[in-house]
Amino acid sequence: MVEPPHDAAIEGTQGIQGIYARPYIDLEPYLDLSALDEIHEEICLGLTQVPIDYTGGSHRAMGIMPPSRLGEALADYGEVIRALSDDDFRTFQRLSDDPSAIDPSARDRLEFGEEREIPLSRRQMLWLKFRHGVYFPWKVYVELIPNRTWSDKSRSEGKDFTRLARSFFPRTIALVKRLPFSSVGRCNIMGLEANDHGTVHRDGEGTRGDGGEGGQREPDHFITLCPAGNKRLFLWDEQAQRKVPVAGRAYWFNDHDYHGVEADPFFRYSLRIDGTFAPELIEALRRDHAVRPAPPPSPPPSTARAPRDAEEAAA
Image (cartoon, rainbow, N blue to C red; front, side, top):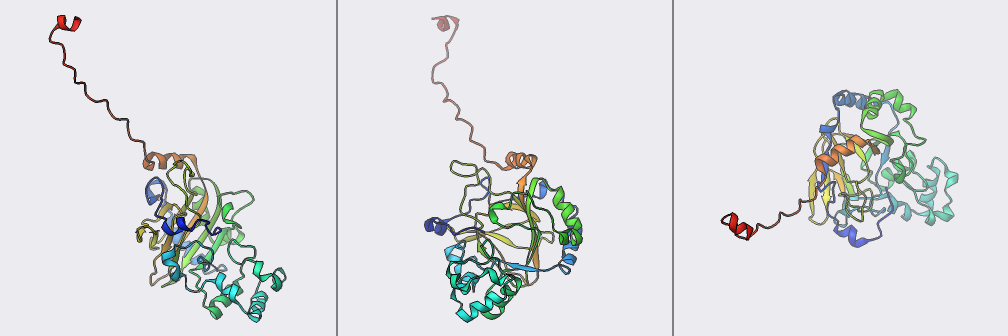
């Protein structure tokens, strides 16, 4: 995630910027998804074998939620940690993977959690949930290619699939390597437990997705795969106060747009792969979806009278 936006007016009025004047792009026509069913079987089995982490849980404190939906974040760990008593903060410190990295006398200057100076340990997240009611939307989070900072998610240098990923998700890795990326910098599995919702947020400050002046040509490149096809992602238009459902088993959307996940009475997950699209995919998407300039207007028809004969034409 990113630092809170500096322009509250933009945050409060943002509509859906989309990609090429569309809310999102269905990528199924551009990908070979023939292995998706077996990938689904592998992921569901693999999740029983690997350590499971949490993510989310501080979108409101990070300033990346739309004003109209702030209440759905419930207890936010950024707010909870700031309000801990001294005794509770010492408990929080003891539960860290590295307690020596946390100086209680400097707690007002420290930042904890995703994309922050000091990551939360599994024990800290569980204690924040059990004792202080923090709501972590994504209670299944497995990094197949770990990534430290959000701004680094598209770069592949020095990164690779983890040993656990290679042991338990080999077919998934093979599928990722066949996707049309020129580089991959991040790959993770994100799942929601039954009846949990994904809090509406955005992953960056607003940006143009149409290549217009003052914005990047495309939003950040990534592919989301939903092998079961049952994760109900939606985009949120804060201006119009309405949801735009995202359908399909493979899609790309502008993650600087607000987005969330509907609650359902069963577990749902998706696989997200960040990187840089291969040139052939970019070319195909621009060919099929980019907004083309309107043709120049035709010249007005002439009002001059045609000559009646050769003699008049020569006159």
